[in-house]
Length: 91
Image (cartoon, rainbow, N blue to C red; front, side, top):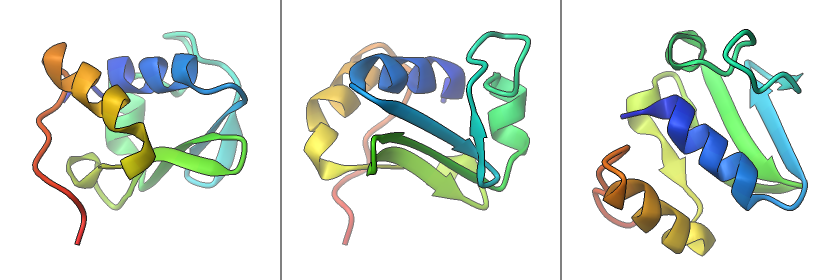
């Protein structure tokens, strides 16, 4: 997965993006901040919200990333870019 590309696309999708890494708000989206492939891979809690609505996130490991069902078009776009593989709906 290309976590950084997925994250930047989610931020662009959101009207009011809020990025949380290990429960701390992140405002530096540059490659000098924590929103890097390594920074995302190394954190335990990650979430991108549009205001108070979660777009995507994970707890423990980025391979367990979830994407809100209301953002299916976003997920499909990311899959077409080769950034992720959609495995199915949450149970």
